[in-house]
Length: 397
Image (tube, rainbow, N blue to C red; front, side):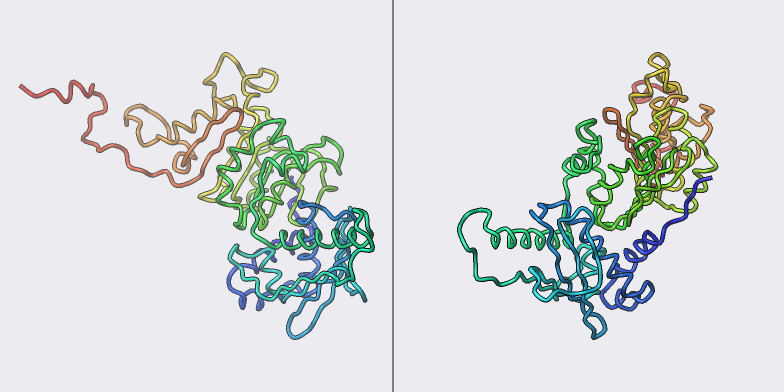
């Protein structure tokens, strides 16, 4: 069975995203559910991680965060521009960069709704006498430039920022742009959700047997959905890629019982993406087991549908309508979309997903299914189904 236990960092992240909703007073009242030190550590690590997406400082910069909460000042140090940004309590006598802000406000800026207020933040660079010379590598110029870039990274990390998915794909090494051309389709369907509390599951992490390799797409989704919890399922152990808001799980996507357990433990999901084995049997088994665990209004995506035409992957280039192939099965969802239009005597048996297929979008090698109530009425019952309409509309003699 799948290991669906979340590590402590992801339990805290999920709580933080939850309590950052609502108004300021509600967040302040619930902050104690996690603990002040845990909140600060998680929020500052998230800021440091997000800041890596911008123009990095030319050298490491240690910023002092002076955070206020319940009448106290809490000082923390964060190093930007390093491979592994450090977060620790403390201060510096003469820092290049100081950030002052109310802790609850900072929490809401990072994890809260897009309209969260920012009224207490102050960012200050050290006041120095100026460069010793006008050469580009003047030590003062280089130090100030690094501090300014770190400050910009902090502001961007705390803002509602619309990241370009193609650029994120290239940055994190995902093949969803370049190897394939999927991100423009993802942008079309995912953009309305990017500031929501998204729960996303992707089947397939990458890197094969290596436990510390893979997860490029998961990190892309983590950056794009700033308030999202991202889960990845892989056949191999991928525990080495775990980080805040990103949780790897191990299991076989072709195992219906395992998927049902996973969906029951972690769902409902807003988005599920199948980028797993691409074997038709696995793709179909995953959809049958997991679509029930997508919330109404959510999305289920199947990537790399070209394998549906390859016999080695359980597909066929001759039996194009076979429901045992990925595309043949997905074509049946178009019939499900129109389940109310079938003639009553056609003998079609209802299918489990008939009432929840809201739309099916076919693109080259990728399909997006929208889950929503599919209960639109058919044409009036008095409109004949078995008669040619031209015959039916002829004037009666």
